Each structure stands twice: as structure tokens, then as C-alpha cells.
Image 1 (cartoon, rainbow, N blue to C red):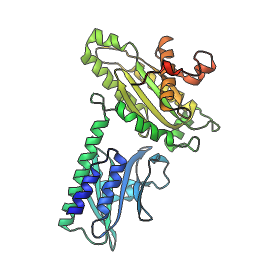
Image 2 (image 1 turned 135 degrees about the vertical axis):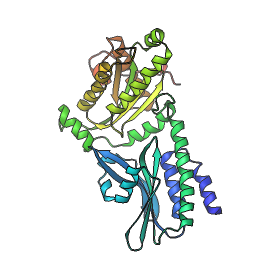
Image 3 (image 1 turned 90 degrees about the horizontal axis):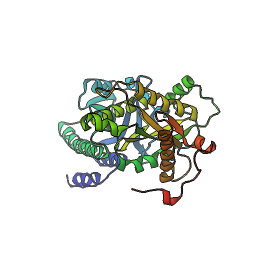
Image 4 (image 1 turned 120 degrees about the horizontal axis):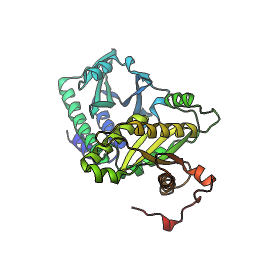
Length: 349
């Protein structure tokens, strides 16, 4: 029992979801009869539910990936895991199966916000005893509760989007993805629909979004309706972008989007679709609301520079008519913005 408690202390010392995941698998791996542990990521691509390993044992060491799930060649359809599929469909806490002699598998889905995106898979050489299941469930429940606490600390209380303090970590992971390469199946469906050419490079993009005349909404209708507008804008953001893109509320009426692995043509189209979706939405009591958006590639510059460039494009949009999408490089090429911002002009908060 003492080694388990020591591992739980180490596990709850992490402040990162992926490191916490590795830590709990390391704890489970040390239990008797366990022959394999994995963390599976559950996701949907083109309406089909899939599973792919996100953390697993390789050469005796636990390794993880934060790559785009839809492009992972190791992905399998959820139908290939019938016991897990039934568990997810029935919203139950666990599933057991014995695919062959000497292998007994336990799946423990991590339920969060009434959805499951992660599942721990534990395989051992003998059937799971009642005592063993109690121990495993105890460790898992500590892990799941701590994951929920981490998730809560990363979210904006009003909209449920990621908050400002998680931006640095997410942005760092976002920019680690290689420039170029083959887009995911989701990205390809956008590209084919929107006319992007195969010769265009696939890049990462950062956009800053601001609600036009939001102060007037608060002044005229009150902060209760203003909050409702923020919540509805957050919902439109969620439906306008893919699951592996990242959306943040920076505070007030400002949002930031990290758009992964797509072309400039597609980025323009996707950002304008979002802008148009807001314009066409009927907000209760308030009526019509519009947004302005500035975006830039994340391939060059430090985070503060990239964020500053997107901000410049945003403010150009707001000062020249609002309800539009502006690309920083186009504004620089057209002589509307200076290519660089002096350090004295950047405020760090």
C-alpha cells in the first residue's frame, strides 16, 4: 500500500494533463500481474468514432504523443473495441473483456463534461479479482478527480473555454508541429470544399477575435445579456472549429483561436465562416452582433510578437469598418501596417 500512496503523492504533484496521465499509468504498471497499460484517446472523424493510443509503453518506458489524432496512422475504429464501445454508449464506469487466453483487459473511461475523450486500458495475465478491481478503481478515481480539478483551473468560468493562463502552454505545443506536410482528413475536407490548391503550405495560425461594440451591449441591455452574448459567441466558436484547434477567452470580449495544420486559403475561409455565423445569429433581446478578427501565421517570431501582430490586424479591422477578417501579412504587404512593432509599443501583462 505504501508504494501506491507514494505514487499518488507524485501523481497529484503534476500540473499538466499529459504528465498526470503518464504518472497514473506508471503507478498502475507497478501492480502485480499487469502486463500492459495504455491511455487511449477517443475522437470522431467524419462522424466515425475512433480510438488511438496516446500514452503507451515502448522499450520499457512510457511514451506519449500530442500529435493530431485524426492524422495518426495507428488509429482504429471504436467498433474494434466492442466492450469499450458499449461502455461509452451506456455511459458506464468500466468495461472488461478477454480477447484471448492469458490477456484480460479493463477499460476505464475518463468522463468529463458528460463526454469521454480519454480511456485508461489495463491488461493483465489473469482475471481481475474483486480486490484488484477495488485498488484499480481507487487509483483511477483519484486520477479522474485530479484531472477534473486541472481542467477547472484551465477554464474560463463563464464560457467554459480555455482561460488566459493556459495560453502559453497550449501555444508552445501548437508551434511544435512541423510546418508543411499532409493535412488531416478534416483539413482536407475543408480544403476541397474551399478551393485551396495542393501547392499551398500547411501552417499553424493564431487569430484574435473581438466583439464589435460590446460596451454598447452592456450599457443598453445590461451585463446579464452581455454575459449571454459571450456564452453564445463561445458556442459558435466551438462549432466553427475542429476538436484539435484551441480556443481561449482572454478576458472581456476578446477571444484567441489557434488553428492547426491548414492552408492560408482555408484559414481565410474558416475564419470568415465563423464571422458570418455570428453575423447571422439572432441573439435574444440584443438582435445582431458582429465580430472583427485579425490573424497571423505562428511560424515566425516569439509568442508575444505573434500575438501582437494578430492584435494589430484586429485593430485595423475594427478601425476600418468592423465585421471583417484581416490577415497581418496582407496588411503589411499593402503598406497599411509597419512590419515590426517597437518594444516600447508592446505591453506585457
